[in-house]
Length: 445
Ligand code: BGC
Image (cartoon, rainbow, N blue to C red):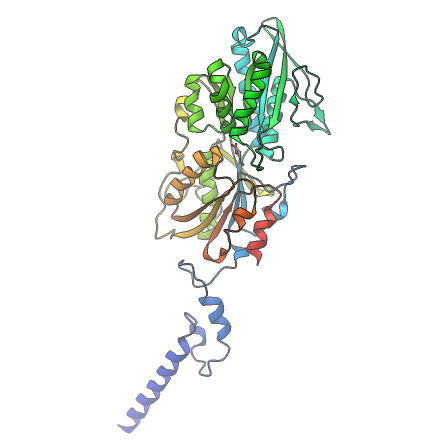
């Protein structure tokens, strides 16, 4: 009887010490036999701090969290050279964008095809010169450079500089003397026409915001006032600027205007004489932006729900994207949107059907993502890309905090990344493609 009591008391004492020991080390079962309770403080610090509500007990350092760059590829804004340090920041870092060259070529061809099909009416003043003006988005942005080159190359106005097509804005070139471009020639139905880039300029406002629609609206006012009768075509690096010019001048004057992005308002305007636009498959890009984060957070193969069907049936075909392992970049493919097919593109915020299946919340629990849009006033990003992201975040069980920048200063955005530990992953849209380090430094602290 006494022995039993002694055994019971011993047991009780052991249990008590176990409870005391386990109190500051959640899940640290390996150490429970350690009555001295020394050496446990380090564990509790790494295990218990700043759990963001995810299921795992271990905290991931910010520098190791999944990171996706999107829309503006980390690169040198003068040379275009990719910033491989940023693209390989950690093993879960990717870029999501679209094939800028394929899209630029499509845009050029779309304009050329339009000229050929409408040759009888296009040369308004009948001087034998098909004149166009071009709105340039950002002279240091790959997409913008590619589109300027694409238009010049298709229309025969391109000149080479250092082995590549010069994409420098001409300012005005009504007399055809600019050295950044040349006059092109087109032979159509036995007649030879000259093609001239009458004017082009970077649409940057006084505060420094690029791709600026209001600036483009003003520019067409200035250009049309001095040589409006010579403008037969208006081309733009994007729809935001294209629509500003269309509404300010070309619609009323019956001058076909071409943009890029297939924003809903631009697609609708095709019914009213907007010449056409290019869809950069934002529905695929927005999906990829969040999907790579989802996959990295789930610890599954990065191709899941991308090239390989996931458990909900989501999969993308090779007709809409490709992945380049060397640059860790996903590129969506572009499609021309013209009078022939625009009715299929009227709402640019609809998710892409093959990847619109809801993920199961028990297998893919909610995670939190910090995401910024470099310029809350950018038409494409605010009217097309962000609404798409907001549709996909629900489907992928991601709780995304959207930060809208002013389009001018990186600090306006990085200031709002003061507590990266509160998020599981990051999606970044830089103001300037050279500035990746402003973000990675914050994540490395
Ligand atoms: C879009 C533009 C947009 C820019 C912002 C481009 O890909 O076509 O409309 O202004 O991205 O970075």
